[in-house]
Amino acid sequence: MKLTRLTSALMLWAAIASRGLFAQQLPSSPESLRLRGIELRYVLPDPLFENPQSAEAIKALYVNAWAFGGGKLASLVRLADSTEINAFVVDVKDDTGCLLYPSDVKVAQDIGATKCVRTRDVQSRLDTLRAHNIYAIARIVVAKDPLLAERKPQWSVQNRDGSGLWRDRIDIAWVDAYNDSVWIYAAQLAAEAIHLGFNEVQFDYVRFPDEPKEAMAQAVFSARKPGETQREGVQAGIAILTKRLQPLGAPVTFDIFGLTSSATGDLGIGQVWEDFVSVADVVLPMVYPSHYYKGSYGLAWPNGEPYRVVRDALSEALERSRPLARAATIRPYLQAFTLGRRKPRYTPHEIREQIRAAEELGIDTWVLWNPRSVYQRDSLRPYKDQTAAVTIGVQ
Image (cartoon, rainbow, N blue to C red; front, side, top):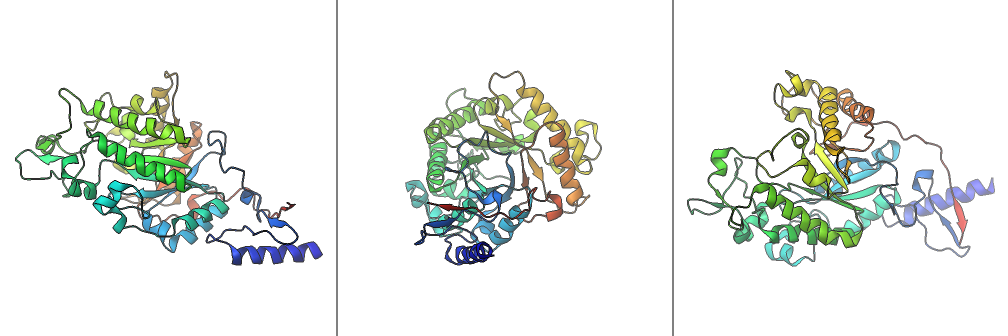
């Protein structure tokens, strides 16, 4: 009975005195007792996720910068606590060019990327993830950066007619993916995120714009070397990222189009499956059924066949990786959103069907993507061990 009362008192003190939103760590007490956690999953290894390859399979949610920096983080952490989710992919730099937190990187300061940050208490929020044993992945968008493009036009795609910055169909300016400085900037932000406490870095938009040929014909990439292809430009960029980040020891991962697993070329954007899986720790093909054209995999309505699309796409990915001496882990992005008025609406059934397709192929790691970071609890399995446990150690 005394131990029960002591445990309850320690748990209350931990909740009050913690640094993170839900952290459950105690300062040293006169009795040198420290509460390590109230569930087995809260007992933190030292260091956290020392070897991600041998840790439990990553099952993640995409968390946009506003959700991470605001009140929504609390509900997302509670969702992770009660389900199979054990990781968050957090926007450190999204496709606006704005940053999650104030940065010390000079380029970020020069272009004003630190003036539109989403949170100023990133460390305490990372502490919260750490206390809840949630693996933190920093997502960094590379080539779609209108803020960088407009503030550093010499690094940007230009209009052939000399009228200024080239823009895509929704009037967004892009930086020149042939320009090494663009990739170095992304690497600097990634290194900073790792030093802050993110466990892994994930690069998105590692490509050229996916625009019609007519539009691309008007785009001038001034950093392009004579004869250099888009594929070679992307290869050079990902080589810069991996070389600069390798000494830091954190996994380096890339988001790529789902169609790269079946395409024979570079999709007109510079992405080829083998170029990524041969150098990355993890590749994340975005196999959203709503993004496949009518007739893909022989399906008249791919968006209505989430199981079939994901299974076929990932089967091709596994087959493509099999001959390689060294191949990255495949961690697909799965669709947890409904695209406009297209049916069906993506309910827990459609989401679980995608997860089932991946797991049947032996892929037990994935990320759910919803741009609003809103997720349905019934899409997820409950956490396997709900048994409360307290570990008290004498220091």
